[in-house]
Image (tube, rainbow, N blue to C red; front, side, top):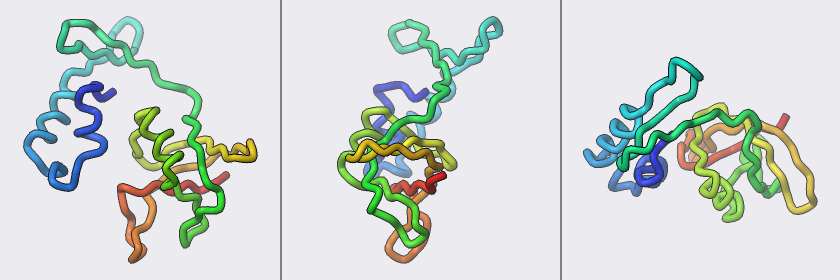
Length: 135
């Protein structure tokens, strides 16, 4: 539901932009322009050119490519391979744990799971890393 022109600034900020006033204004702008339609129950947002955009929740979990052999200390599949990152960026996914995903790999295997924050080198949660617990 983040406007396209603000997506990268909000979802993937540079380290220097994380706490910037510009980023905070972008967040406020993107979420303050959304309202709920009383008739259909959809989320709506008026774009800067006056067009009303409708957002319909996707009912199927997003599919993301995964290297099933890349595991963290907890045995979760890590989504740090360039192909995984490309799938995440292409679909403009934001990680708000828990996030249901379907992972697929080279062999054609698919497996559903729940994405959460990965762990950094010292074992602390890192919001820039994704790790999936498979069902």
